[in-house]
Image (cartoon, rainbow, N blue to C red):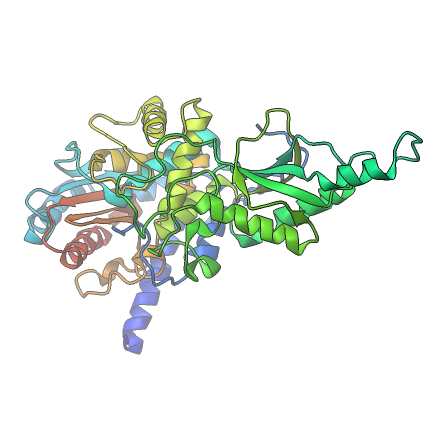
Length: 496
């Protein structure tokens, strides 16, 4: 446990860092779509370490989350006071150069440090070399999804039926009807279909609300018995991630609840490894059928997978939180399931197949359209679990700088979703060593960890009050703990 004086120093650094960061980010425009919400809800003190190897216009669609007022303007220092010292690049070469030579970072780590306000690269070492990014690739996933979908987009899960049996049962007396005919109609269950829309955050609470609305709609139609079907046809291609069955990610399917987790981690938070179901969609359909029965409906047999009819009527719908909140949650907790969902939503928006291959094409095309330096990038997935992913440290800093662009406020969740060093998400337990503690509370960054691969990319308020974006990539590192400490040390040096 830290002594009181150390806690005071840490807290003081945190407050100073956050005030300075707030002033710098304020220059980039107001935050949009309630972008702090995911961090408040999901980033608080979780012991797990996320991604380590590790058509609008529907009547029932909720209104977009309101934008926050521009409350940070008074905190913003004058632009002229944020000029980086003229000797900063030379100082960074002198400070960071020797640290990059640490054997803990493998034989040839890459680095990029950029002045966010000007786009000037202040320090670079192999910055254009494509390397395995691990979970820092989620920064690219976030930028592509926000740019293509918009921060207010929500993902829907629906229940539909093409069967109108039961309608008109209470519409007066028809002499042609007989008691026998009514009985025959009642013995024939109405077929309903639970249609997955790709919401990787659908939980039991959302499924319960969907069942309640469905049961109400069916009762209004005079229906009391149903045959439950489920449709996962929105996604195509392999369900299994190339990493294979793994506690870090469920089979990638358009329908799941609790991210297919088989332990209690689905009850309180997401992120981090957990035993996963081999059939998340079937499990979700089973839970949905149980919830319908709890609401007085009879079900005919177990749920079966079947594509919904094209002319089906919608009975009920539930929506995810806005993409802005999903991005924050993905980045803070390094959530692999959300990452794979977001790249598929990006593919759907682009008219491409919602598969690993289609998502790769859509994300790379979106980033290229944004004139980002995608040369050499290979984005085989959205989560970074694929060891064949490649990205440059220069692209990572360009993505972070673009997220702070005053003309691109829709990208701001990329910055606000980054974990805070020493305080939240996958950085909660880091920056505790003496050579890195100055970064605690001052740095926001996305982590990345695979066997032999360690990365860190984020933002920090550097000398002169200028907001800096940084990215460090290391391959063939001898050990994850020592590599993480070396990365923490590197980034902490940017605060002074």
